[in-house]
Structure formats: C-alpha cells, structure tokens
Image (cartoon, rainbow, N blue to C red; front, side):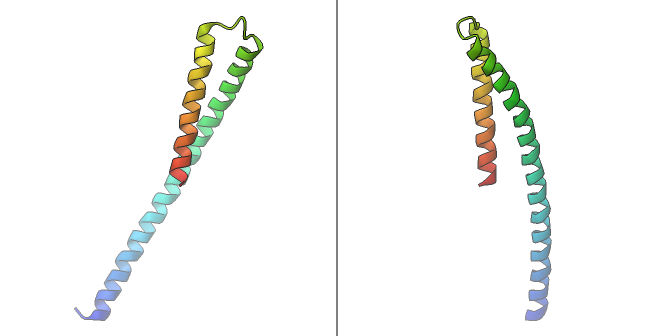
Length: 87
C-alpha cells in the first residue's frame, strides 16, 4: 500500500471515529438535559418542603426536617454531577 492509500484509509478511519464521537456527544447532552429536568422537579419539591419547614420551624417534626435535609443533599449531589459532566 502506498502513502496516499494509507493516508486515505487513515482519513476514513478518523472520519468514522469523529462521526461516532459526535453522536455520543449529542446523546450525552440529551442525557444531561434529562437529568437536569428531573433535578428541576426535585428542586421544586425541595423548595416547597423547605418553605413548610421554615414556616413551621418550631412545629416541624424531626422527620420533616430530615426529609428536607436529605432532599437538599440529593439535589446538591445531582447538580454537582451535572457540573462535572459538563466540564
């Protein structure tokens, strides 16, 4: 095989890898978007729960406070995960 044929074959392989990477990046973006949408719903649940706990802070049960804390920690981890995926 001469140099031109080798370069042409290399170029075709690079194009194939590039096309595959493009598809994977697109799918990754969609995956992150889906994850974001799920977290946004959880964010609303957290805000509502937090409002309840803060409004009734003296009357809020230990379980309600723990639930709000857990939701907050889960959200924090979820958003950190998205940030890491986008770096």
